[in-house]
Image (cartoon, rainbow, N blue to C red):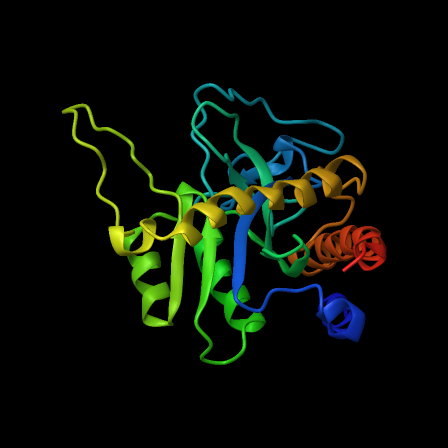
Length: 248
């Protein structure tokens, strides 16, 4: 229902004129699940509490927990995840958004399990849903998307990868290899995509601070997906009247 609502909104004549059909950006953001770390228990039941109303003794420093061996009893769809090194792990989902680059409107949104590959996998799904079949488009993204299999897949689908290069330097002083070559980065459009793609953070920021979705109030992937998509719709609904009112 949420995705149909978004498609209907973007299909309106006055709105459709605001959208780019050639240039897009994608990104993901961490959304905290409505589940506590105490609910993250072993799947085999070996750490169940000793009785009603009591929590079992837990040594969180020594207890190794992973999504393979543990699951939340409150929200089984939530996954233990951290967005970057140095950040704490938490039970979460990943919210993904696809933005058109002309006016920064969100043209597709989706929630997924929080995994290391979810952002790239969902990006492929969303760009295929949003572009015209077979049409060559550009896709801007941050350096997390600079993975050879992903870039190769984009090229095979006639999608130009305007992706930030992950120039991480190894301990030996060698920069990490990238699949984004000079034939792409030398064009002026690449620099424009890199500048505009950051606007997608405005939608995430609004959804978390104003839309109240920094931490979910629902459980399960389906409900989380709907809650996130409706926030992206609300962000568009606030911006569209202002864009329509601007002189052409």
